Image (cartoon, rainbow, N blue to C red; front, side):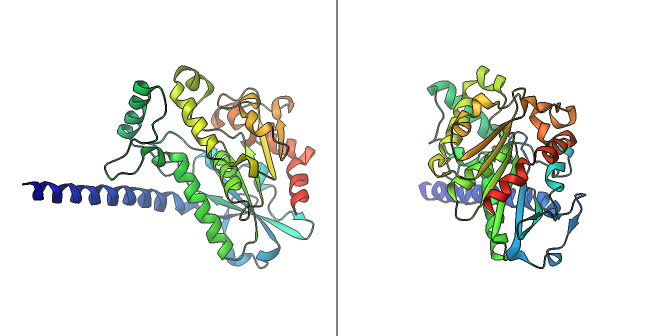
Length: 304
């Protein structure tokens, strides 16, 4: 009987692990269909059209995230490459030419049950559980959506590097910006810079005030950053953003290596389709603001 139970447990363990991997692979295959190099209108074109990879500045754009149980579709307006970046297509920076790559990384993270278990553990202990595991022994904290996003982005950076791109800048909005900052801090030799548009993770300011476990998740994800190794970062924020404001991003704004821009006096307003002021950097108004102020251009000129 013990032998039978042991065999059954091993089967379930292997099955669960395979299911988790298949779920990730299935999600990634689905969202990756809209990956690609994009021109000034957002149309995808072939890598064969880029003849001089060595003298290309490749901006790899990463969209934000919904909750862990949702597959983020790149076809949604808020997940498309924003106008401010599309306008950089084929622009010259010294001897380099800018190209844009749109990466879809919206695979699902925790299931509702897994998130519920993490929540309940926090209710009982008053702190975030780093030891709670799934059926195959993987810590649940490692199955959070933000960490999957970072994995996908890093693998794409490695892939593009192998294809000959030597000058890679990560850009991202919301959770995509957060992931970009984290990866730059961990792999500075592979990533030349980051353009972070309204970085955010782990819920709204209101969520974190009412449910402290979200604040603990945010702090956990901050601790994954190698802040002392962070260089060449351009970060945008707004005081009316309901997810993160300049004051809650102090761990970035206080760094001398980060150029931090508060858009509160930019004159641009939030739009409903972009989640209000959280998506202000996705608007045409912000693109016009940047065209006039040239923060991104000057930032890239300082690196290249």
